[in-house]
Length: 259
Image 1 (tube, helix red, strand yellow):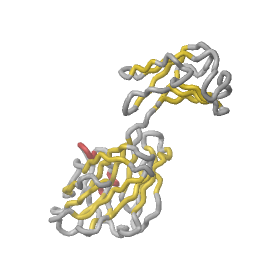
Image 2: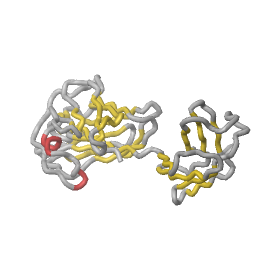
Image 3: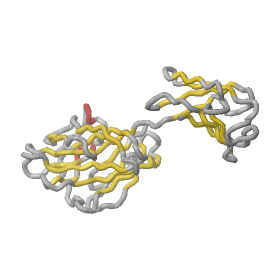
Image 4: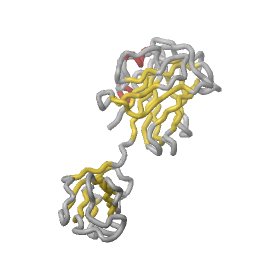
């Protein structure tokens, strides 16, 4: 699993979190906190049209419940939310057409403070920030075909004074994956493996070599078996390639793809 943690504070010293600064629309790389803080391939930045310039303090920590993932620093510091008409928008980039869950957190220790959160065009959620240490605004959404998404916030109707935006967690849905039990593609050999995270059962296996010769179950491979309950596949490697783009056995490194 990939978990992306975003800290909307003046500073952050935790390497597992992406710290988004005030007064800046600089792009920030988000580490993957589940992969030793490696680059996740996701980024976040404020839209330059409305960058926050102030940050109240005195949020509530430690956190629990739905907000138990929020660090003490992220709970206690925040970016200030000033307007009930103008959105502060964060532009997020990641893999195209990727489903994700976004949890948004606000906490401020003065009563009457409510932040409205929205992800893409999903229905906006009002989050009562007063002494909040356990509640989040949670959304299910998807990046577009270019890998873009937006997370934005403003004062909710009826909120007094200003409110806060403290932290965001993004959990992308895992993409399709394929494993191979034995990568020696020998003629006549039984080839087996597993697959996961497909939205529907794959129906075609394609093998492509280093010279772009390709064979598939649409032609040369005649006995492909897919077990969608177990998440397994099996087929027999052909003895000789006589059709498709390959004229002989595949050469060199071979890539297997299920579609």
